[in-house]
Picture 1 (tube, helix red, strand yellow):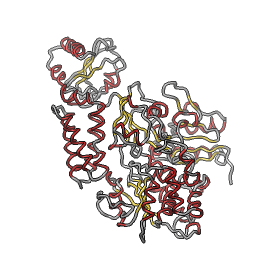
Picture 2 (cartoon, rainbow, N blue to C red):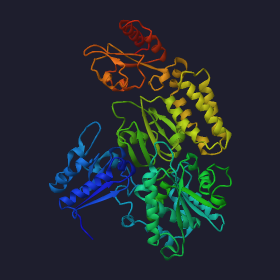
Picture 3 (cartoon, rainbow, N blue to C red):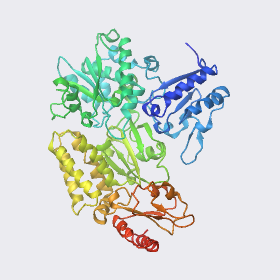
Length: 627
């Protein structure tokens, strides 16, 4: 075996590939060869590293030097300075958003150092396309233990004692689900994996499948032994081509090595796993709809009971868990339930993977212990809200989740505590919003998604979400009226109580939480016809406060319509006939001189006879609104 003096772990996840990591790898291989270093420096294309917004990223071992946003032009510099002269390249190192000081070591970067990796323990450390690298990190040891040393009852008991709850959204105890299926007699049982991940802003399962596909297979093998299944399906949306490719490669390698197929490891246990491609229907994330889809039918939920553990795929006893759930199982079997319970809380044990996105400095994939406060995730790991903006809310639980305001940021991330806020942990989407976000518009956005993705089977979801969306649309267009807020709340509760599946039962959550915590924004839209964030174009106008304007020209330069006029050292103005309410000037101004007024002001400003009158009107508006 060749010995290398350094290994470069270059991220090969979807995000970094989109940023050019494959080209960087090719250039790095070529440069090392040209410098005669190809036998000294090992370049490995890994799965997702997790620090998605900083990609392409690479880590150089054994020093643990972390580089971000690496381009083709950086490759000769890295080889010359780091690998030949032994001087790490400071300009490519991560810099804290506020201090701007470079942090060379990955383990010292807060984004990484404050995480605890279990489901993601192999991310950025192995070549996802080589089974040997997974095996070298104790891969398939848990499966071997389960198949050769444990009975199905012992496996289930270990899972029950671990307290692992399904990470796909519902949070149902995994061991209990397996036990229910194991008790059912049947000539055929199925073990299923949900990789359909359809939440906007979510990429947890995709990253696991891309970075560590064998851990999914190993978890399914253990689950199949526990319930007595000999056939498995991994349901993956077709929009995840890299995940599908690496999963299929992993299945082929596992078969070649006697880890899938007939008589696995000589134990007499048989298991065959196939990939089934989904067409992107959000409702197929619901277990019964997913099973109907695999059967070749339209993906629509069915009433329960009977539960899938009794009558699932093709009416046979079936167990469905998501990717992250299976990723936890091998370590529980290998290290024991007490080890797993050492993190988290009594009822929410272990860790949870989140996709952190939105108005946050450090966008990416994180894994944290259950029970960690939201504030620690957003400010310590996420680096806080960038560009000097103020935190407003965090949407937790995907489109069916809820918006949690600033005063609840000390809430521990557990299934029980998050539900008390009106949100849900869900599968792990976490979207941060700042003071530029209109919460009425946010509720409308998520309800648009769920209304569109409703399968239409049950009237409460099919009709109710559409009627609620119509109401929200009217409010954001300036046609809201007294009583609309109460009507939205009443309809939301009715839809939750009467919908057939989890989609309808949780779809109103964004509306309910935004009304609960940001009711004043709804009232401003309805009664004042004013969107104070400038998002709803029919309910705002932009103007410049001449007393504050420094005539720096920034607003003029960023305006795409050339609606801002004014000379140097002379306060600028906005031509209302040209302004399209894009907010570019508002976001670019550093002196708080660009203001947002109600839509009615726009019509008045358009009719003013001269600029002096415009100035007076603007100042009157400022005084009247208390700004």
